[in-house]
Amino acid sequence: MAAGTAPTLEFERALAAKGRVLVAGCDEVGRGSLAGPVSVGVVVIDPSSVPLLDGVRDSKLLSAPVRDALVPQISAWALASGVGHASAAEIDAIGLMDALRLAGSRALDAIAATGVVPSIVLLDGNHDWLSIPAQPALLFDGFGSLDGTDDDGGPAFGAAMPVVTKIKADMTCLSVAAASVLAKVERDGIMAALDEENPQFGWGVNKGYATAAHRAAITEHGPTDHHRKSWRLTA
Image (cartoon, rainbow, N blue to C red):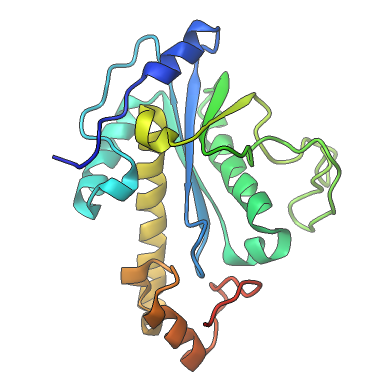
């Protein structure tokens, strides 16, 4: 059995009782990595009718085989789900928080393409990086402006629906834990594929994070296009 107390639907059902019919749990992975994308998972449920899903925990508490086995179960359990990514180059260009929002927007766009529109997003943590920002920001070529419109006059990327944050939601809220599993599995798959092209960095094992061996490899071989070059990559 996986470690940790099983997350519940208590918080999601409380949101539904306040009129938020469809709740989207949301979580990110890869925030602290030196290489590879940031990835955001979103899982939409109807808390009033969906059952509990056994075995789901925060992705960090599960082994890779267990996470992989849960993916089809989560996809069948949810009304809709999606994972979005923002590359290392995008992180360098617009910063980590906006890159997280870009990745989250891509996940929400994938869900919207199925016709499912969540009433509210439940986001792990204490900072809302997902909502469309109210304040103007600089134009980033290729992704529109961050001031409420894109290059074609459409809405800027980000969640247009309300977003509520909850600390440790990935540990306590089932929809968020499920989203963390989907995001972790997709991002790990990306890093495994990149590892085949760049075996010297050990991404298949470290997933791009700042291990001593990874930093030493960057010092020896130099950064790739998959490294976040605006970050401190070597010790």
